[in-house]
Length: 80
Image (cartoon, rainbow, N blue to C red):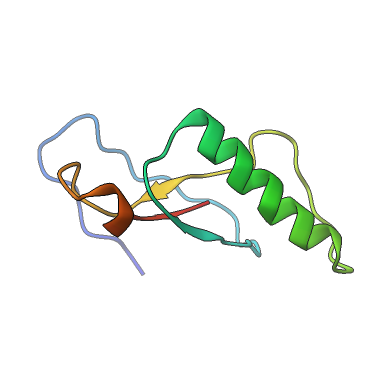
């Protein structure tokens, strides 16, 4: 399936990634370096208790922020 073409903004790129299984942890609030570190540690701690082979090369974490910057912190939804 082909994604829609971006508008005329040259800073938007569409990249293909190979299929993979990912783990996601949702968390509220503001995204700071300290919060990302805490959330990553919590996620990896839960995954360590499973029999899954977790690859963490340092680059394997993405932070997704879904709200407008004007959303009050306790209503914000983020995922790592």
